[in-house]
Length: 517
Image (spheres, helix red, strand yellow):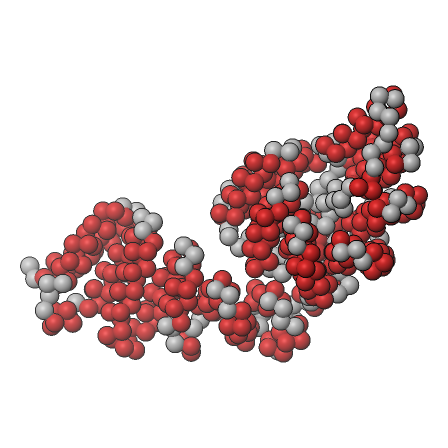
């Protein structure tokens, strides 16, 4: 039997084993076949070149299945080198091999390797699939300008490529520029993607039966439209009970009595749908955080990140847990990763509050200004800027921004809380009480009620304080701060604690979590 016939038999045997998922057995046969190619003379090499290309590719496929990722890339490259001998004849297959190799490189976070492999594909032969991969690796490598150009190329090829349009918004490309690139009147609603409050506040498909699965809940939260977020997500789940997208953001809006039970049940439902997506694990992390099981919460957050390293909600939740536990160095590191993926309002908030915790006020100032300018008119951006101004002793300017945020959105409880804190810091307790009482209708949450109770404690009105603390406990039965304050007020009423603590010395930390997911 001739050598070519033996080689073909070996290859077919190996392919059969591969199809039966016997990858290691296939790899052994292919390894022997590859060794045999080295003994061929130049004429025999030419005669068996197609077989050699197929053998190297299948060997790389086996290595990939056996999780030998770097070796797989090496053998895909070797196969690519052999295709070059045919010049144009095998060009399409060469590109197919390059995509395979690039996907492996991306999987192991070797983005520079992936970029080099993909850039070897001639520009006029780059499909949308290739361009999507190339844009992703450019983003990961910090090559923002190159990523923008690639996303624009995708839109030129396919004007309805929503993923590319949203990516350009994330990279701060103006809406007019995107519309000019696409020349499509129906590509995407302006109210969904425009990078300011009027757009983030636009209700994605409000009142309609369709929905944008990728971003609806995130947009509601950035606009501080929590009730709309809840109602809209319930509508989506009614239409599609197995939807996973954005459920982690939705879980962050579930507050009040019995919230821990609802969140735990939601996590269980989503895990039954898929335990290979990050959303369900993040909801588990949220449940553990409510139960004050911080180590478990961080574990589940890390598990979500491991499943999808670009899932920004995972970094948001992990960062907020670290912030709440005053681990500012780690929270800063976490929010930096989030900001690298998406410069949304929650990433800005996390960065600024981490810098404030570290007393790095100049850095906090820079990011708050950037956020304020990027998201003009967003009440959360106004509030964040005011928070930094308060910390840098620019009290009148901070009060103006808090009032402006409340005027934009009376339900922005963070702005209400922080403005009340400004009054408390100046021992203007009655002004703080008047403000909080006046906004209770719009901001009936445990954070506002607890802060209101603290103000009443400061003026020794313990009956009123207890009334608001009991209401707060009904809304959030797991809140340790509320439980501690109830014990304290009981002691004050019974006379076992003689004086209320001085609230003016407390730092500006507000329990309400509506500012971050």
